[in-house]
Image (cartoon, rainbow, N blue to C red; front, side, top):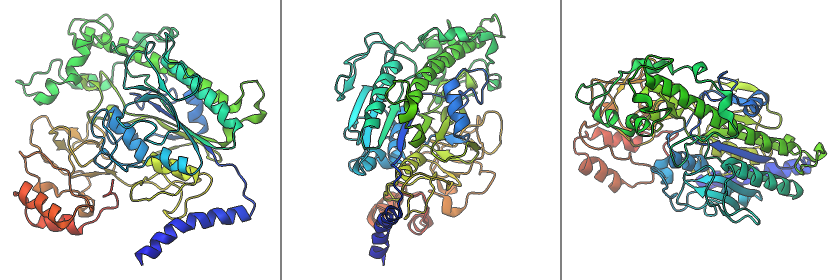
Length: 539
């Protein structure tokens, strides 16, 4: 029976495509432009934040779908990129740290589309040990990790691509290469998928935001409000005072802003009286917001150039050869960014500001609207395959934004979406955080947390009093047993949390993990993990 189901899974897409061909459906396969920005927080679009200037992204939002509850599973560069490429958590694809490699045999959307006849290309930042070619990109122009916005070497296999930036703005050079690629693709008989990974608005190698094209003049720091949750935290954190656990009170999320003088001398921590605010630290937050917003405005200008070229691929002023109506545009950030929120800088921590991202999708026959459903970066791989009409094993590439049953993907585009109902947390914990079910302005997105909880959009807070490595308070909605990875009340409080077993492991592995590594867990936990299945277990 299983082999029959498997055969049908692979045969049905071909039969559907053949049926459409016989009935005269000769629409060209759509192109896909995927714009993936770095450290861009969810509220940095002019359509949702009147303080920031992003006219081209605003136009994309007005003509497409705005996903206003979009999150990343892990709020840091490499893991987020790997999850977006594969549609799987870092615990499955192998990338849980910076610059790690994808597991052998891990499949990306570029590999699937290349096999289906698509031209595939990557432009801009690359932050994996796996190379673009190994990830399925036939053409690439990359710069590894982060660095200067103006002086860096470029690794590329594209003919005539420059070998370095040579003083030109990073994103302008990448936009030029992408524009040329769009024109070349429009003249070919192949559809394309282009993944443009920007570095901006990530800080440069000196931990600064350079003023690109005097965009900082568009902003007055006095007009930029200090984050509302700035006042929720104590002015000075010390581990001795018990106001924050040591790993937060002494972490880079606190100290980095002062070391790098974000926004001015002393950074966010400067207690001296400010010109506009209670402290100079708040003044510096406003200055830093100005620099951050201006960087996004400079990036928006380059995005506008690329989007315009879809209307006029040859750049000759004649739009009769426009490919815009047959091109899907996906825009999202790799993670958010703290600019004084909770008196933090950087990202990683599972607060809303670090984990919630902007996500926009525009495509043929898609009605503009705002979707309030929960979506994750791992959902985009499935969406991209659906857009291209490409079949993939839904066990190894599963997403929630899709418009089809698992066996009958549409050959050309997506007209409806199937939504996820929950936010499964990764099966590992970065820090010994403790959860409380009380909702406050210190809420954070439920990501990179303990493996015991499956989330469904509720907000939680970090407990400042309890520092145990366990979940001490249940969510507002009790978590059904079928949605747990580990039973919460059986978690040991002092042992490091191992990765929960997957169906790929045999009985001996499960016994060793549960009875030898974790002797404190009752034997009933073995039965739970052996006989309880989860629809997202293979993530």
